Length: 286
Image (tube, rainbow, N blue to C red; front, top):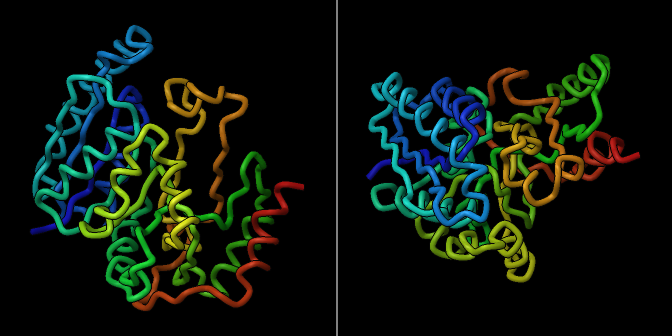
């Protein structure tokens, strides 16, 4: 029983191709099965709006799969007949992956993987800090070094990189009582605890309500291994429900690809954690 990268798709041909291409570039991705599940269009409240874009996305994935099928241990592209919505389709693709896998790296269709992203997930999933019963998953994104709607200057980026290097932040992780919706990794028995909640109509919110109520957490990197690039995509779920002007902005200006390779050991960041957040996150809210 191996490991699977499970990716959900719907109607964004440009971002799903960017996601898939970034996965191919990941070190170690050739040792994984790849499963892509595209949500259906029939039954959606906006079937006509998405029909053409979904068909274009289908053709794009099919062509990509033909060109890249030899890279993975196996590659499967499947399509749902009806529209399930982003949370239910995520549950379906992860459940399908766990039929043959002991661990799954899940991604939405607008996440860019750094070249060491899979290595990060592997290290974190085997770390004693993840094996604790209170930990449900491993995140790929990071809450540090996120400029949101701001554009950091080259000087600010250099300073942040200096801090990241001097404090070996690429080897550090933190716990949050928050599970990212865009990308995470987990194991079969941990998924059994929260999978149905994650697949509910408000699954992204409900799973985090459970985290806070039950004392569950997610293991996050201090330096991002994955970036969500689709928050403002005109065909995206976020824009559909919040509008382009109200969608959350994610802007990771320091990622692992900008730093030297991590060492073998992962260490929890405890001392100075809040100070770093003050300096590299809250400053952008001012």
